[in-house]
Structures are given as structure tokens and as C-alpha cells.
Image (cartoon, rainbow, N blue to C red; front, side, top):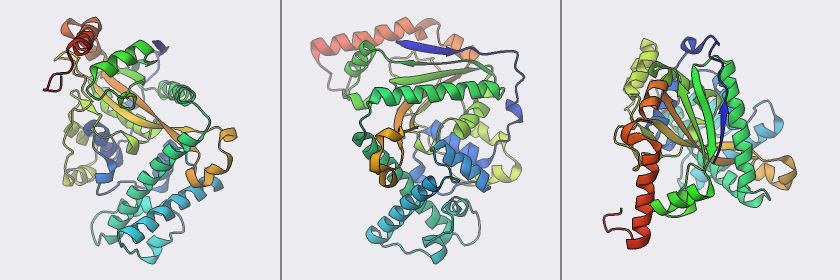
Length: 358
């Protein structure tokens, strides 16, 4: 198993606590903690085009690029056509043909008053989310590039993000990544009830250790802004027994806190919990479909219809330093984790899986 560790300069002054956390940040972090889907959202909370552009940058889309603007318009038109033809929805003229597709993000962020435009903007953006992801999967299938090459590209980009985190002064104690060895993948496949390769989400994994528990929420905020697109967190694959989502509200202004409380707090899910971990093991982990730009030489004539981006699944784990230390003690020790997993594999191979699913 290959592991790369970013050397952290502990002498850097932190600017983390000066981070201006806003309602959109809180909603993004709530999403990844709960393992819910952005398709179920009722409203965005972008305040200006700069925030929208920053979000689009995480999707490797640059509104100043003619090609990327055409791509946004194409996906928008596809979404509206589907909604009109298959669901029978109708749209006001300004929404059917906006001068700037980014306006949808601002309209979807409106609160109060007559909400028809806000609701319809959300509907279109949800379809754009699905179509962009679907076409990226098609592009990945058609390009002559192996999964291993895409994983390498994602790996390099995330390590660059780690260096950006360090340069920004975040209180990162350690940041390291690894790719599962062949034997580890085989063991995990045999230990899982759903023993197909597509269900192994953590072939590429990064673990981030921050200095204190108070640093977790701001670090997650920084990551949703600068590292990955929050809307492509894989639903149902998050686990969190470390950070109370309600605590995120403490970072907001009074007005934003009132708006956040008006939205129902998402139910926490534990589908991402590893059953072989010790009972007292504490961690935040979630899976992201991480965007990777396809090399131009592999695109051919596909870029207009299918875009220039594919996705690679990446697991992120986040924990504070003291919890990380406790996670290595007693029943949580890694060698005991591996022993529990290997016993399951041996028992399953010899006796089959029990009717109870284990």
C-alpha cells in the first residue's frame, strides 16, 4: 500500500479562525456529514457570482472560458428540454433563456416572497447536476485512458490541494493519502456482502488530522470551497460520530442562523461506518466523486456533448489529533481491525454468509 505524507510546517500562523463561514458553507458541510443528496435540497445560499464561480471552479468549469460557458449552456438546455418534454413543466422567459446561466444559482438562493422562480431554478440545477454526472460517466467509458491513470491524476491534484491548505495556514497536523493494495481490495471485497468491485469506494483515500476538535468544522468548510465539489458527495456513504451538525450554526450570523434553522436538519446516516472498527472509534469520513480533467489528446470530438471532465471516487477522513491517538489504542488498534476483517473472510469462504447478512 503506497502512502504519501505531506510534511507540515507547524510554525505557520493559522488564519483558519478568520474564515468567514456563511450559510452556503454550513449547508455544504451538513450535506457531507449526513450523507444526503443535493437533489433533495430546497434552496441554495450563494450570495454573489464570485461564490458561484468558486463553486464552478471545483467542477473544473471556468465561466470566463468560451468553451466552458458553452458547456454550461448545453447542460442547461438539456435539463430544461427534459423537464418540458417529460414532466410537462413550463418556465418564464427569463428562466427559459437567461443571459448568464450562473443567474440560476442566484435565483435558486432567493428566500421569502413569491418563490416560483426560486423553486424552478433549483429544479433545473438538480437536472444539470444529474446530466453533467451522467455524461462524465459516458465520457470516461469512451476515452482510451485507464482507471489507474485517472486515479493518478486525482491523487496529484489532491496533494496540491494539501499544500494549498498548508499555505493558507490551516492547523493541519498531518495529511496523507494511500491507495489500497491488491490484497487489501480482495480482502475487503470478500468481507462485504456486496462483493463487486464497484462498491469499493476507498481505493483512493486521504486522512487529515487537525490540531483540535474546534478546527474540524472550519477545515471542512475550506475543503468544500477549495478541494472538491460538495454536490458530488456520494449519498449514503458518510459516517460522522465526531461533529454535531447543530454546532455549525454557531459560526453564522444571527440572520443566517435563522435561515439555517428554518430548513430541516438532515438526518444523520451511518452507511459509511466500517463494521470492523472498534466501538469507540471516532471519525468523519465521506466519499466524493472528484472531478478530473481529461487530457485534450484523448477527447476528440466529444468535449461539447460530454464535457472535458470525469469523476474518480475518493474517500476523505477527518479527525483531530487527540481522537486520532485514541483511535489507535485498545480495540481500535489497526492490527485488531485487520484481524476482525480477516476472520470474517475466512469464515465466509469456509461456511458461506449467514442468512442474517453477516
